[in-house]
Image 1: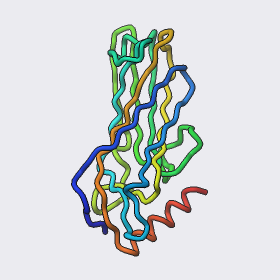
Image 2 (image 1 turned 135 degrees about the horizontal axis):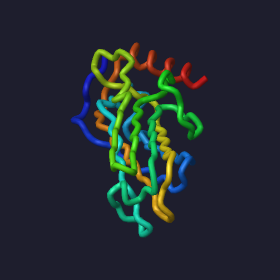
Image 3 (image 1 turned 135 degrees about the vertical axis):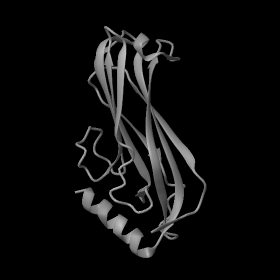
Image 4 (image 1 turned 90 degrees about the vertical axis):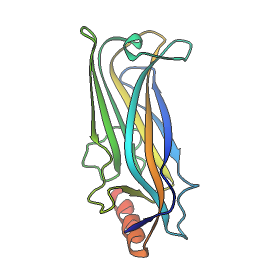
Length: 180
C-alpha cells in the first residue's frame, strides 16, 4: 500500500512526428521524485495524449491543417526502455497508451485511450513507478503535409507516494523481471 506524500501535479512531454511512419521518442526524468532510501516513487493517476498540428514555423495549429490525408497516430508511455518502438498492450512496462484515427475526407477524428493508466490491480487506483525515467514513443501513419508535423503531448497526472518496504521490493522486482 502506498501513502500519498504530495498533492497531484502534472508532468508533460511533447513529441513531434515529422516523417510519417517513423517513430519518435522522448524521456521524462523522474530522478527528482524517486528516492530508493525513502521508498518514494511516483503514483501515476492518469495519462492523456493531446494531438495537434505543427506549422512550418513550429507553431501549434489545428491537426487537420498539418495532414494531407487519412492517418492514425499511436503514442505509448513505458517505465522501462523498450528501444523506441511500439509494443503490445500486454507489456508489463506499459504505463499508458493512446491512439487517434483521422479521416481526412470528412474531417472525422476518433481518439482512444486504451490504457488510462494501466494499474495492474493496484488497490490505490494508481500505477506506481520506482524507475527514474519514463519513456515515450509516438508515431503517425498517414500523410503529413510538407514541412509540417504532428505533435502529441503526453500529460501525466501524478503524485509522490511513499511505499512500504514490501511494496517497494515487489515493484522493483516486477520492473526488473519486465526488463527481460
